[in-house]
Every structure is written in structure tokens, then in C-alpha cells.
Image 1 (cartoon, rainbow, N blue to C red):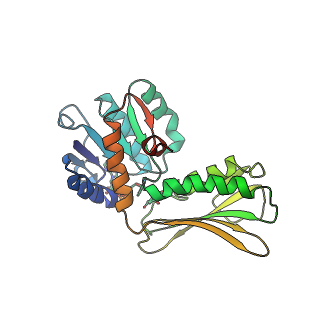
Image 2: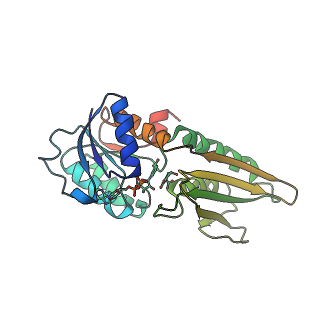
Image 3: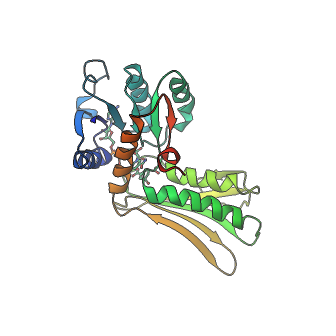
Length: 238
Ligand SMILES: NC(=O)C1=CN([C@@H]2O[C@H](COP(=O)(O)OP(=O)(O)OC[C@H]3O[C@@H](n4cnc5c(N)ncnc54)[C@H](O)[C@@H]3O)[C@@H](O)[C@H]2O)C=CC1
Ligand SMILES: O=C(O)C1=N[C@H](C(=O)O)C[C@H](O)C1
């Protein structure tokens, strides 16, 4: 496949490496120092775009690609308040694959998380908390992964009404604690605490390679699909 890399930062570089290892070529690389509108000319040799930029840039990048019938894989977090625009574009012909986290382990963790939430919610002695730790360059908080974990817990725990990104003793609110430390690629924990014990489920990325591999596998999957919005559950048959 010929891949356009939109966003050539920490993830863009690792995706390039993994894509080449899997026999693909890079048709176009766009980042801040060579910003350009996506158009017929610069996308003419591209089968699929892989987009890892910023919450502000992401949606406009998707819509421009869709205008030229280029499918988009994106892992950019923090833009989901604009989800409706992308939904609409996908009903009109856009092909889109989104994951807040492309690693296999985290997507299995999402399933385990829901199972544990279902099992534990009737036990009043436990209170739940989500914790995420990332590198100090991360722009958004809480992480997209922590939000998805929290939504999974709230869906299966009728006592919890919403999540908040602060510590609280309100038992109707699920706290997400965000920490920014050094170069941590990504660590997520769901912690259930009682007076007697602590039960933790945790995923720790060792590097960005798992995210990058997931994104390239998603691109290989997406080019074979019709219009629509796809995610890791489709790729992994979860
Ligand atoms: N879904 C997943 O598995 C993962 C998601 N992420 C998310 O991906 C995004 C990028 O992460 P990193 O690569 O670590 O960040 P980064 O800051 O290293 O790279 C982002 C790059 O996008 C560039 N950029 C900004 N506006 C642009 C535009 N309009 N067009 C093209 N390029 C533009 C920046 O100059 C920068 O080089 C973040 O939202 C992060 O949360 C990161 C890792 C894994
Ligand atoms: O910004 C990052 O680095 C990461 N962002 C994603 C998120 O917000 O969940 C995924 C991963 O944890 C790394």
C-alpha cells in the first residue's frame, strides 16, 4: 500500500518504520514544517492516510481526505466532541478507522475492564478509580484510552453517573487521575479499593511499537472495506 503520513511526530516516525517493515511505501509526509492542503495532486499516489496529529487539526484532515476518496486511519485523541461531523461524512462515503489506542493489549484490557466492572459493581465496599500515566509532551488529559475505560465502567455500573478528571469522594462520580512523567509511552490502571484490599487491572506499553503496528494493520484492513466508521472491535473480531 502507498501510505500518506499526516503528522510526522513521535507516532508518525514509528508508523513509517513499521509500514516499511511490512512492505508498504510512504507516498506523502505532512507535518507543521511543510503544511499543505490535501488535494488531488498530492494525494494522487496514496491508497490510505494514517493521521496522528493534534485534536485541533484532526477533523479537518479527515474531511479533506474523504473529499478525494482517501480512507483515513487515525489515532489522534481529544477531538471526539466533533464526532458528529465525521459520522456524517462516513454516511456520505468516507472510510474511517479510529482507535483511541491501537495496541492489542489495551483492546483486550477494554474487554476485561467491562467484565470486572459487571462483577464488582454490586459490592459497595469497593470504589473504582482510573489512572493514566503518560510522557510530559502529551497535550490532552485525560487520555483517550482512560476515557474509553471509564465509559466501559460506567456502562456496567448503574451507581456511577459520569467521570471527572479529578479526585472526588462522590460515589456517583468515577475519578480519572492523569499523571505526566518523563517519557512514559502509556500506562493505564483501573483500581478498585476497599477498606481491606486493592484490586488493580493494568496495561503498560513498553514502547510505541504496539500502537504503530495496530495502526498499520488497521490501514491494511480499511482499504478493503466499504464506506463507514470502523474500530479495533471490527479488526480483532471482539
Ligand atoms: N491511538 C493510539 O494508539 C495513540 C494515539 N496517540 C495520539 O496521537 C496523537 C499524536 O501523538 P504523537 O505522535 O505522540 O504526538 P507528536 O506531538 O509527537 O506528533 C504530532 C505531530 O503532528 C504535527 N501536526 C500538527 N498539526 C498538524 C497538521 N495540521 N497537519 C499535519 N501535522 C500536524 C505536529 O507538528 C507533530 O509533529 C495524539 O493525539 C496522541 O494522543 C498517540 C499514541 C498512540
Ligand atoms: O499521547 C500518547 O502518547 C498516547 N495517547 C493515547 C491516548 O490518549 O489514550 C494512547 C496511548 O496511551 C498513548
